[in-house]
Structures are given as C-alpha cells and as structure tokens.
Image (cartoon, rainbow, N blue to C red; front, top):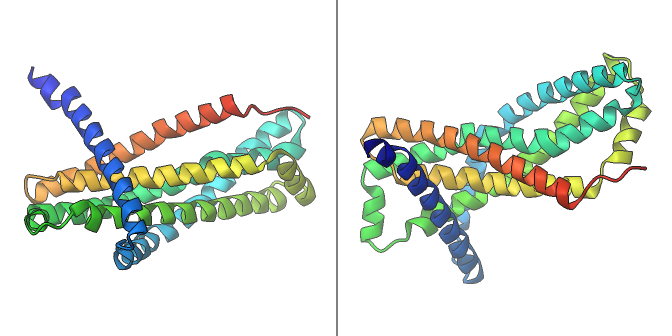
Length: 264
C-alpha cells in the first residue's frame, strides 16, 4: 500500500497536475491575449533569461552533433557505395531529430531547472500563497509568460541548431572527409521537404511547452525547504527528458504513418 501511494499513484497525480496546469495556462493565454492583459514585460524578461542561459550551450552542442552524424552517415554511405547521399542523410537527421531534441534537452537542463528553482524558492517563502490570498492568479502572473517564453525560445534554438548542425556537418564532410560540396547540398535538397521542417517546428513548440509546464508544476508543488527545491529541480530535469523522449517517438511514428516517404 505504501509503495503504491509513493510511486504509481504519485506519478499519476503528477501527470494529471501537469495536464491540468497546461490546459489552464493555454486557456488563460488566449483570454489574456484577446483582453489585452497578457504580461508582456514578464514574457520579455523570461525569454531573455532563457535565451541567455541556453543559446551558447546549445550552439556548442550542435557542432559535435552535426559532425558526429556526418561521420556516421559518411562511413555508412561509403560502405554501401552511396557517398553522394551522405548530405541528405546527415542533414535530415539533424533537422528532423537532432535539432528539436538538442534544443529541448538544453532548455530542460538550463532554463527548466532555473524556472523550477525560482518558483520553488517562492513557494517555500510563501510568496505563492500570499499571491493567492491577495486574489492574484499564479497561473496568469507566473506560468503563462514562462510558457510563451519557453515556446518562443525553443523555436529560436531549434532554428539555430538546424543551421549550426547542418553547417558543421557540411564543413566536416567537405574539408575532412573529402566530400563533394555540390553533392552534399543537392542530395539534401532532393530529399528534404517542407513537411520535414514543419514537423521540426511543431516538435519545438510542443517540447518548449512541455519543459515550461513540467518546470512550473514541479516548482509550484515544492515543499520541504531548501532540500525540497533541490529535489524539485532534479525531478524537473529527469521528468522533462523522459517526456521529451516519449513525445518525440510518438511524433516521429505518427508522421511516418501519415506521410510515408515515397521513392523517386
């Protein structure tokens, strides 16, 4: 009985709380936008903080991701005698899988943990309870601007990873592996479609929302003093990464089923 209460039931309560928080945040977002009550200043402040905390690490991670994919697909293409397809394989891998996942993981590690620590600190200092007593909506004042900021920054970081990852793979394939520049670009242009980029942007939007909702829910449910804040931050990173992996698999599988790749 104690195990069920501590683990499976607690997990269901956490997921349910995150779903309710996300639904109410989106609801308040549309209401505040149409009634001109959206906290734009707080949104700009949070977006600037998330971008400053995540942009540089994301760029540094995108370079080895692009180089690694270029090496692996270049070697595989060389073994089967299709070295001209290395550009298409590595480019599509960066755009469809690498870019949204790298941006989301860095967002969860840097921005998500910071958001959780901020809200958790306010929770143990009773600032959240004081806002509720004064009749201020915590979701409208704290969650909604962080949700929008995470989505916007996630889209920007995904675009940055797409550019840096593809450029690093192109340079490595051209100057290190003695590939043909024209072949690298032309094969990528032949296989890539607008739908691939649209799927990447949809993933980036959903991943940013997941990071924000998980971080806010963990922060607002913090208890136990400073140690509880540390536990909430740790749980935020772990839960965000787990949810991101699951949702990425679902998105990829649904896209493959709905839009199967046709041959030439």
